[in-house]
Image (tube, rainbow, N blue to C red; front, side, top):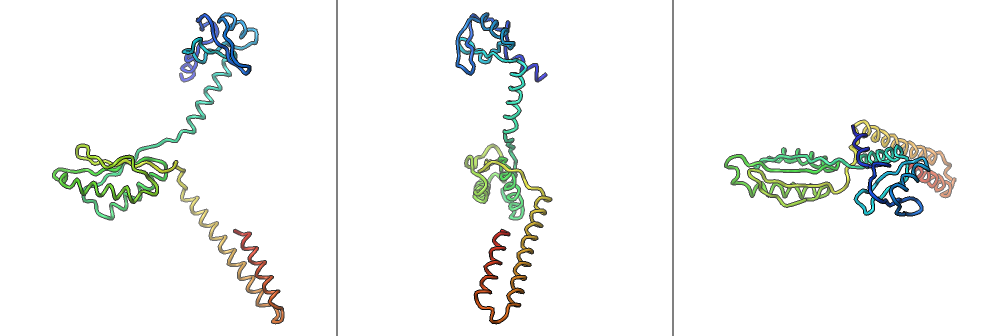
Length: 235
């Protein structure tokens, strides 16, 4: 179905019924009668493909139509893969949200923004709580201030019906969240690295202790310099 839709976007050969066309290629472009262009395509064993029908005259290329469709599909696929899917995550507050609930929601909002998503935070005023709309505005402004390192405000808090909204966008493109397994592996590697450093330092101390008293300051300095070099290389 998708292939048929792509095919129907372009006219080829005898489907092109204008008087003349502009043929573009590596050597520039030239305007020729459409019948001559179709004959040129047949002689080269390719197709006359109309790529810009709204131009005057329409722009065409001499190319294998199957190859052309393949290139178009490939280009569309690459463009789709490069697009970052941005979702809008909602965070809901009450006008008198307690500190524990606030910190919990702040943590989630920070994660959403770091992953590249937008955040729509709002305070819902139920019944007579609309009297506390200033309190809701203060809460949203505090929320924006606490997230300033990862998010930027797209507009000041605005009241719409019984809800006051605040929109935040990520400051930088989202990155894939590291899995718990990856974090554990990274922590284990860091611990192993630190243990190796400690072992290297103990070895240096042992070597220094075994040096004769008259070994001189130069010998001890050489051991320390070698140890420092090894530790630096480990970094």
